[in-house]
Amino acid sequence: MEDNALTITSFVVRFIHSGPPENAPLRGSVLNVQTNEEHHFLHWQEALEFIGRYVKLDSDELRVTNDE
Image (cartoon, rainbow, N blue to C red; front, side):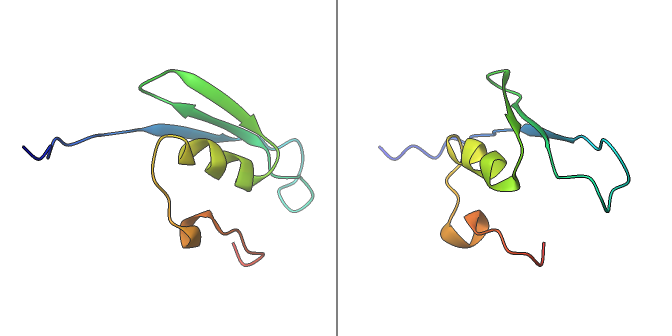
């Protein structure tokens, strides 16, 4: 029998600015709501890697460019 159960995984992403946005490095935290596990990051790629532990992300979604 095929399992068609809906799986929901939720995240809260917080960005922290320590100065004017144009001068502040990107940093923050991402929280997995279901597990209450939180991961602090200095680079967006780290947040994506944390999320990727719970949600299958394809290579385009994992790729970080300077345009973003």
